[in-house]
Length: 226
Image (tube, rainbow, N blue to C red; front, side, top):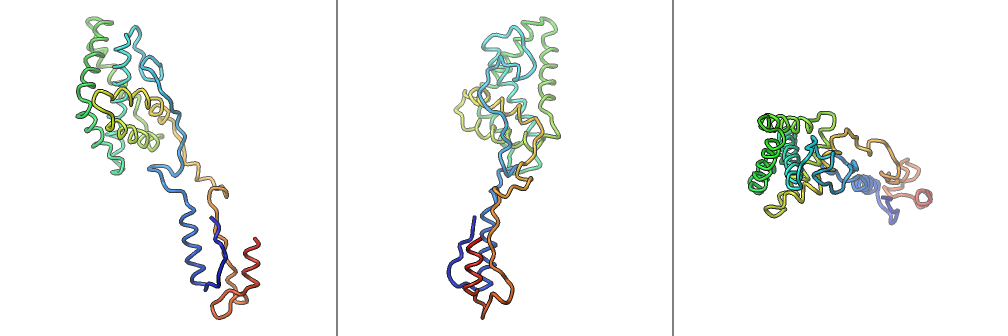
């Protein structure tokens, strides 16, 4: 933002105007980052390898449950890892999801449990337990914690707006983004770019340009021509 030179202001007024201009030129913070990290987005199906641990031979219903179970696990991990920021409301939102989408999540649990018993027989329960543990571990992150927590918080809020029985819609639309947030990133505005932050133009503050606390016309013209 550029300060327009108009009128015969005193030095105190110029200083105040410059401070205001600098403050409004800053980008507003967006949770963990000033600028959007640009995580990959786009819908994904339960059969996509990106979702999680492979479940070969799964039916359409089992792939759906697989997708739901992975998103739930990711948000569960977020509830544990993202408590450093009360603004994210990671625990409250996760508990709200468990209550709001309880039937859909219970059905997903039963479906995945039945899948492992169908495919692995007597070892089915153990395989399901191992699958669940590994799924949790695959969402654990340290280097990418800020990005993961920001995305998980946004997804949890979106899931709470879905009608009961529609948690799958959120999972389908947001799982790719949640997985991509596990890749460490940095705030791109940390690199100085004069096109992102416009510095205010200040008038000369030397004594020759001021008379009785008023900017001389010659100095004002010089500043306006920059």
